[in-house]
Length: 201
Image (cartoon, rainbow, N blue to C red; front, side, top):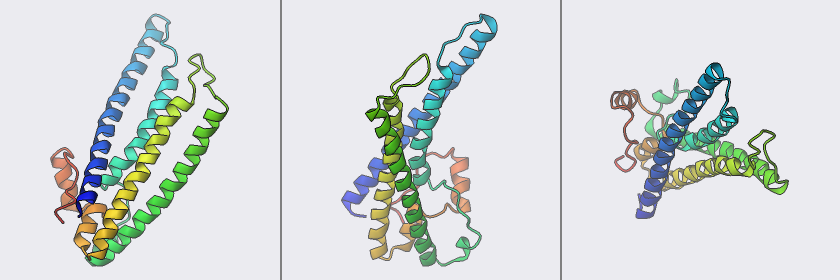
């Protein structure tokens, strides 16, 4: 891996880990807010107002920002009945094919998400709720999640193609392949701490 590729990989890993922490905290905060809202409704007949709307925004945003960390941890589900029986070279080529399919999917999401965001900006749309939140605000963070997902895919693709030219099949598999049973067990027993090392393969 070249120094540029190494820096890019470390950068997307760092941002993805940070977004996972922030997303987790946001979800817990949202759950707490909804819980307080329910208690107030049952006991005092009061409401915080807009809790369900904010929860919807948080869920949508956190979902998009979860894609990159799942990709980097190789957590996306793939059928491996035949995959595990193939040679390392064949598995690496299938990994690249899967990454290409994921990139097409991400590009489609990014295109349509931008259309939604642009319409909200152009028409100055606001939510039809008492909060009247300008929709471009939560949608911008939501769109940024898809953009970072696409960036993460681009970094992994460039690194993988570099390793492909060097015929480093194990390194490709270690970066974008499916976790082995041993790796899954290790992640579970160690609480999923740390992403797989991409430079040691």
